[in-house]
Image (cartoon, rainbow, N blue to C red; front, side):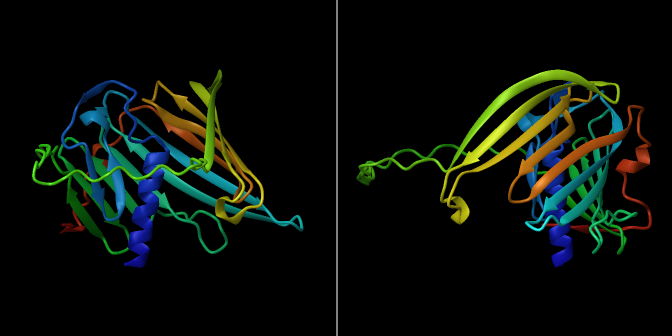
Length: 261
């Protein structure tokens, strides 16, 4: 179960970070906008999904950490992602082996079907599909004030306001072409003040993102420089913009479906 939970959390982080759930392309109303599946979050903003912008691609991520003696530690991960014209998503996760290299076969596969309002997490080794229905939009009416209960006094304001731990700035970068796609870039600089995570000086993290509007807001290239973790490069490669095989978004016949509650 620990491996399953870890895989699902990683899968969710990857989906969100890669922009798989972006809504920058042609939009249409979808069923429930948000849900939590097996520990990872899936968010569809404003009940919209990308339609009419199918593609498949391989996303490769490499992180290189340099130790004080000059030794380099390299970790590689890989994922395969697809989206059909109806906005269905498929994400295959290839986790690293003990040597830090991405495995050759996926361990877990996520299928997000906003048309059917269902999400599947396929356990490839056990041939089990964990099914979760996407919740519908819920409206909670505000509670009326209770005149019999006296309002709580506002908390006292300290003499010196708390300083924010992090300052973030964003600047646009000049558009460029990557693998035939026109992409828009931005540089995000996060500076953490001294004292953050026990540091005796500021920590600066610089990230650059390159997004393709043609693919509906998908991140094609991302680089990150973090002194705590090293240099990370994430790139979408082998891009195929034709309609994917419909069976990619279906549970195989030899899988057992288990409902998650």
